[in-house]
Amino acid sequence: MKIIPINTQKELKIKNIAGFFKKIVNSYGTGAKIDCPKQYLGKEVYVVILEDGTS
Image (cartoon, rainbow, N blue to C red; front, top):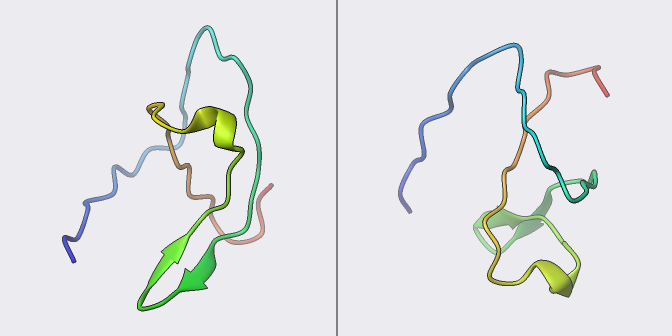
């Protein structure tokens, strides 16, 4: 599996957001997955990784 580099920044500003949701990453075989509503199939998405203890 390709390792994706993580851009470490403390702030993210995005305009014109249609919505967002928070999910827990679950194990899936030898990887991981995030469940999301099927209405977002085929859409470009962002996964934001939070530091431990932040919400």
